[in-house]
Image (cartoon, rainbow, N blue to C red; front, side, top):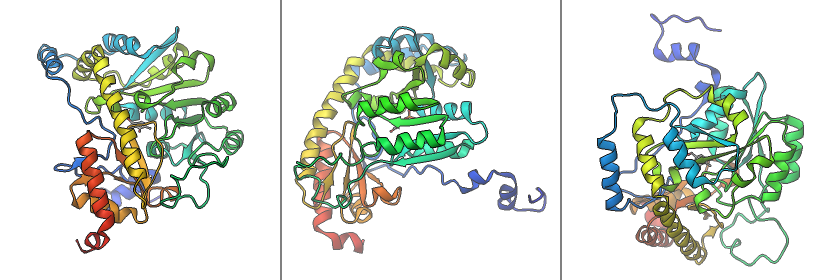
Amino acid sequence: MPSISPNTGSTTSLAAALLRREVLDLHAYHVPESSGYIKLDAMENPYLLPPALRSEIADAVAAAAINRYPDPGAASLKEAIRAVTGLPDGMEILLGNGSDELIQLLALAVNKPGAVLLSVEPSFVMYKMIATFTGMRYVGVPLIINSGTNNPGSANSDSANSDPADFSLDLSATLAAIKREQPALVFLAYPNNPTGNLFSAGAVAQIVQSAPGLVVLDEAYYAFASDSFIPHLARYPNLLVMRTFSKLGMAGLRLGFLAGSAAWLGELEKLRLPYNVGVLPQIVAVKLLEHHDVLLQQAEQIKQDRAKLYQQLSEIAAVKVYASEANFLMFCVAEATAVFEGLKQRGVLIKNLNGGHPMLKDCLRVTVGTPQENMKFITALQETLSHPHRIQSA
Ligand SMILES: *Cc1c(COP(=O)(O)O)cnc(C)c1O
């Protein structure tokens, strides 16, 4: 262990001496500069709120007591969430400053020496990142990928065979890993990010039943999906469901929640920093949830546009697109990074998944935008694919 001598060493050597190995080895979560682009990279809702609702919010904000600390229990907000979520009797809510904060809180709660956080791969990158920086051991079980299908053109053929869909849960491998690793925490994104598919509910239920620790179903994309485990919460004593309002149109507010039994949430509540959800997010979210129908209507529009975008992508021979129950589509091409750059040159920012995980080689993820944004994306993609040389020379 090098000694710490702040007066002589550079910041770099002090950092090397002071910081945990896991922190030094981490790469910060990269958020690219997006101003001026058609922004289809971060699963945001592309729609503004109706003017009447905006002025209602403005009035509520104008009257807010921002000189005071927020209501630590956020009673009104929890009430509003209960009203739109349909929680089973006896189930409670724990609020987070975004659901990312809740992943961290869960990890902090269970990270005894050697404790394992298990998830599947490829999935949401924060599970591994938070496991790493909280000092948990991370185990990732690969999803199923049918060999040789990661080629453009092959996904859209009608599959009459019985192969499981790409990126399905590998149930036997996952159950074996759970038995072997005895994870304190299992995270499953339902639907999954970045692949967009919804895992089989039966397989998820088996995982919940065989896990020795907590299983958290991350329903960040619930508003765009055909299923949820919220109605089944009371059936499984080790199940928690996590949701965020980010993808529904409140990404700027930073608001997520865990739903589960009062017994679990009472323990976890001890780790929540007292004022983690500010006065303004509480007030604005209550107003928005009073008009939940507006947000659901926007989600409905996004689902319809997702189907259209899927259809358009599947008609491009050089593209392999995956079915999605979220507000984005994953697709793969021959050279994802060149396509990503070509789109960017044409003013469209999406997410390049290439290099993020070996199973995502040459894959990209596009958020469903407004019909006009989607059209511009498709046009830019077609241009990019038909002018590969212009991509390289720029
Ligand atoms: C976006 C996302 C989150 C994080 O949402 P925030 O509430 O904005 O922190 C969590 N899980 C998954 C799977 C996501 O895609």
